[in-house]
Length: 62
Image (tube, rainbow, N blue to C red; front, side):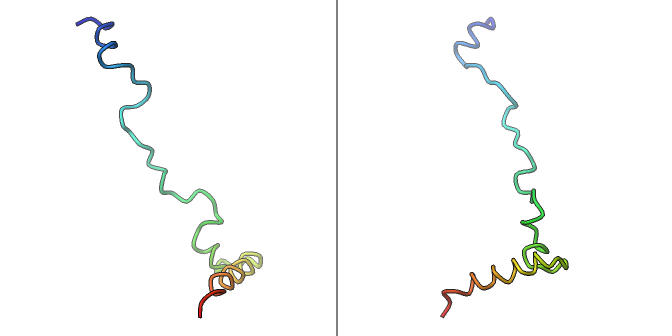
């Protein structure tokens, strides 16, 4: 079978055959890391943001 017939029957695939990037589950910014969310790394603004997050999470509990 020549190349033209193969392309007609199977189509053209551009790109890698099914390989996915391994970086999908990585944390990309510091703001999403555990220490920054809880404010435990010592930054005053991060501790204040953690306080507001905690208040917001507890707003409608009981």
